[in-house]
Every structure is written in structure tokens, then in C-alpha cells.
Image 1 (tube, rainbow, N blue to C red):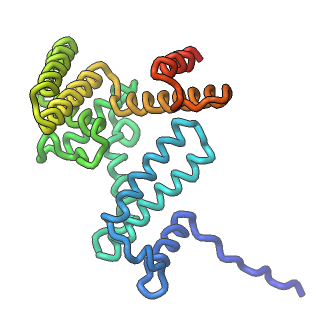
Image 2 (image 1 turned 180 degrees about the horizontal axis):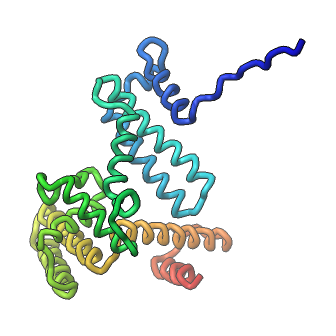
Amino acid sequence: MRKAAKKHSSSPAPIEKLKTVMAALRDPETGCPWDLEQTFETILPYTLEEAYEVADAIERRDMAELKEELGDLLLQVVYHSQMAAEQDLFTFDEVADFVADKMISRHPHVFGDTDANSAEDVNTIWDQQKDKEKSQKGALSGVARALPALLLSQKLQKKAAKTGFEWPDTAQAFDKCVEEIHEFKEAEKNGTHQEREEEFGDLLFCLTNYARMQGVNAEEALRKANNKFVKRFEGMEKDCAANGQNLSDLTLDEMLKCWERQKGK
């Protein structure tokens, strides 16, 4: 007689597996002591760090590392959701459901009857839908203050520009940057440290606004400049090592010549 085949229980969906692991780590009786001590505030630095590590993997086009970093970032979402569920605030499923509904609402050209023939049309629709959702709030609402400073400046300025608080053209925005440079130089000569800091902040804010009006993302521009600096500086160190030298032993003039060779490469 043929025996009936054994039934194998199907494996849980990966996201369910991750949620189960997270719940086990936070179990009051059998969980991990370190994980049990964590709060939204103590986990926040890790959340920010993981987001930057995702960006770094993308910029280096390391897809194997991107997969790993995306997993680490997803863990942060599950972690915060687990802590929220423990306090009866919300669950991971509610987070996922909310963002799915938001994407549907903001893409009527995909899920509704609106037409969009270009990326510019999509951006217009997106902004219109956001305005509907936040019509009862202030113009600057919805901008997270914890964003990196340059990115936050750009987002605040974009929001303000929608109300008409905007330079008529980029020439006037540039003139304002020049004005702020002079004010910073004046503070450098006669001002206190606090005044110099304030004027330098105003200068960065104006430069960020000018970049935005020129269609340049200031945060990304500075990130790329940082990466370029690292590449050239490390190249200088390698060139020196190949010649049996230490970079720190060179004079500034010699370093600058080394730098120009790296730019040529």
C-alpha cells in the first residue's frame, strides 16, 4: 500500500520571518538583554547610519553590499514597528498598509484616471496630491528637522517657494550669496564666534537655495565632492608611498603639485 506523502508546512514569507525574529529579540523573558534596553531614541542613530550606508553602496555601485544594507535598513523599520506595537501605537502591517495607500493616492496616473506623459507631469501630480493631504497644515509642515542640514535647507526653500516666497530669477539669488559672503567676511574681522557662525550659516543657506534654483541638489553635490576629495587624497598617499615618502613630510607646495597630478588622472 502506498504511503501518503508527508505534508511539509510552507516556510513563512521572509518579512514574517524577520518580524518573528524581531519579536523574539524583544521578548521580555527570553529576548536579548541589549535589544530589550533599546528605545526609539537609542535606535535612531543606527537608523540614520543604515540609510547612509545604503546611499554609499549605491554610489559605489556595489550591488552585493546594497542587498545587505537594504536588509539592515529594513530591520530598522521592523525594529521601530515592534517597539511601537509593544506600546499599542501601531504595527509593521499598519506602516506598510499606510505607505501603500499613500503611493496609490499619489499615483492617480497609475491607479486612477489621471494622465501623465512625462516625469515632470508626475512631479506636478505628486505635489498636488501632497497639497491635498496637507491642506490644513503650514507650508513647511512635513519636512523632517532631523534631515542632513543641506538637504533640510533645500526642502524648506522648495516648500517656501510654493507660496511665492522666491527670488524672481537666479541672478538675484546669486547676488544674495555674494552679499552673505561680504557679511561673513565682516563678521570674520569684527564679529564674535557666534556671529561668524550665524553669518556662515546664512551663506550656506543662500548657496543651497541658489543651487536648488539651478536644479542642483546641494546634498548630493557635496557628497560627490567629498567622494572626489577622498579619491584624490588617497591617490596622493599612494603616490607618496610608491616613492618611499610620507605625505605629511611634504611641503604644502609639494602637496599641491601632488594634488594637481591626481586631478590630471
